[in-house]
Image (cartoon, rainbow, N blue to C red; front, side, top):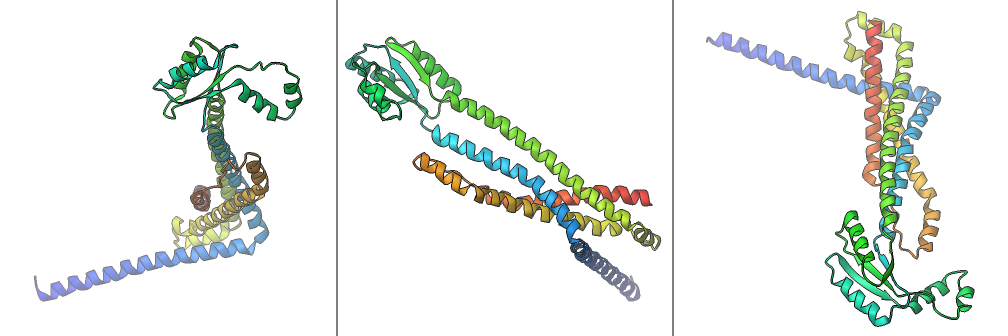
Length: 324
């Protein structure tokens, strides 16, 4: 290969590199212009933009509020049900030594963590401390309450294993009644599972509503500029070039709506502070109710921006195809 040919090839490669660099720079510059121009258009019609953003924000705040509610109900269930006890009421007339012997027998089981014997006098004192029972307790001549064994199952047991333990305790000699205080927790878990599914469905429907709101707003904007779009098409502008500002408009709508949704969720949390403190005081500070996680509040605007982009993308592609 001659020196002239080599130089020519190098010159062609250099020109190609500069051309590609200019093309990338032009592409990036148009993205910056589209983002700024679309934001300027939104700020130029503040009332309409505020309405659209408000609808998106309220729609996305509702799933966040339900998620907060379900999370705190689950926390309350965990706090109040962390000591799942099985109350074993012994037959009337059972003596103290017999109750202690039965308690020792139950403690030896592999699925039992602890057993506490509650005497009839202790049970009577608890009733006397409850509002409305003190007068009736003092009117009694004899103590009618039996011995009670508070059986604590091991934490590793699942619901079927606990139910099997309850069945076997009922079959013990000298046992009159067995009450499983953990059955309410099973019902609560079932209700929470249903609630979680409802929240997912609700979040999906309201996200679709936000997508449709953005799509319709972008559709109206494109329809009002159909002549301008026609001129751009005649001079050779590509469809991605024409629809890019509208895609950024969808992103801005979604982003602002997501920020509003997160702010509304925080406002709901703040509004519930006083009632939650009173509830916590009623349970002697045992409840530890939480707020929405920070990652969720930060992810909501990003997810909403993605929804806005998708809505604008679908509608702009359809509108520009019709205008072609």
